[in-house]
Image (cartoon, rainbow, N blue to C red; front, side):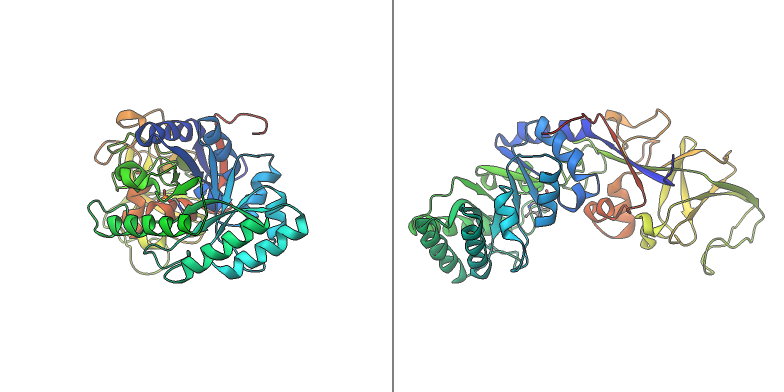
Length: 393
Ligand SMILES: *Cc1c(COP(=O)(O)O)cnc(C)c1O
């Protein structure tokens, strides 16, 4: 074993989550594997999701899309965030659908299509309230009109129209029906201009699971694919999702110290009693946020124990009290697996159970969302994929 910590990724959980969401939505699914599959490994996650029935892959950038193609994955793929000078010819040649939000990008894509000699397949994005990417206001009819003109001329084929929701994870939010209405109006504008997109999509994980009117032809699932409940439940939640990642390491030093011993950088933590300290070889460079100070726990020796003092770049210290702890003991930072054959109900940790913390708890301790914890798992943490199959998709 060479890495100091591993993220163990259960691809069986990824496959189960695809099936779970498909059963709820009854639509085609796009597995969102941006940011290296939310830190889980884009290529193995993509293969597992496709094998389980996902039809599409979604990524942020051209580089991410081309990496999938480089791994031999030929499934329909949409890439949606581009610089105006991106290598659109490479995307077109690789058969990747290009998400388009501005006429600046559209003109560049058509130029690239002429170079390559085949039309670009594009999916036009409308801004329905997030105020990020997507065409808004008068820019939408303008984008649609240019796209139709280019479609007639043979430079592009408009396969899709899509948008992204702002607060689908807040049940009952008034923003959601407003965004759906804005989206339907934008679709009417596109069809009126002569476009006939056959792939209309709006929903992310939270909307796919909870808001049937957002499902259209396809749901784009990120967080739910990785098994984290989009509504903040610590356990499997209402939908029975299975977290795929377990972050684990090993105790590398143990010391018995008297009361009054300072721990880690700074004056914050001094032992109140004689105790046993266990050193873990991972820190904020590996994805443990410093902001969790005073709250975070890990699973060690069949119990939850607190991380004390500051999380450093490479290390953190656990206060084991009177618990027996030895060098080499396995530690689970978060995950469904407790690393010692024990787990909560449904095989995954739930708050209050004698089980490992969840990624959702880590997010709460850090004042962030689970996405940031998952994508923050550092590059030097090893990735170990369970149930991986060999070969190409
Ligand atoms: C990241 C992303 C998703 C996935 O969102 P989840 O809430 O994690 O399901 C879907 N669509 C777009 C455009 C995204 O950027």
